[in-house]
Length: 192
Image 1 (cartoon, one colour):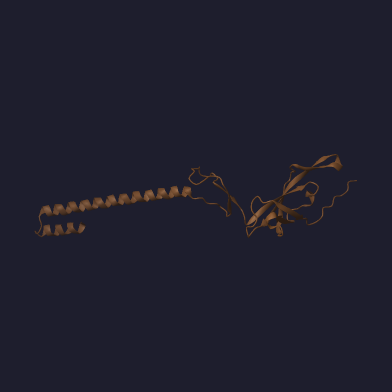
Image 2: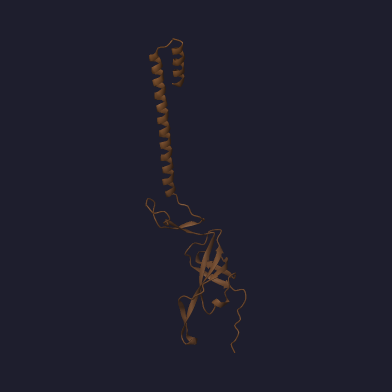
């Protein structure tokens, strides 16, 4: 349209075109400019729609800051949840935590860094080595009565060990038999 308008202007100046032909070329040019502006507006509107759709899609994508396996689905696909609401529970499986209840008559010998040997029923002939990382500072429930000491309750302490699980054989919730290999015996000085 711009080229046609330029030609019509030259032809009009040379006396080869009429003012009506120039007006027609000018009108066609203005219509073309308006169509281009309209098309640009549609492009901007489409880009805005795409940006909004990408934002909405980002709300539907789940990301975890660390790897693992889904151990529980808290919400199902299609449910609407607020941002920050847990949707699934992720179990860390490269290294697992094993909890052992150790009674108070033995917990004094256990130290962080001691070895833990773990067996599970599924792999009863296999021992999974681990390391004690934490000993609960307060006793929990009583596991038995100490009949020799005026029927006192014997409390248990939660000892946590971390066990490498590179083959992902150990699963969250498995029952384990834990043997703690303490590094040095604890000597108790007799009170005088």
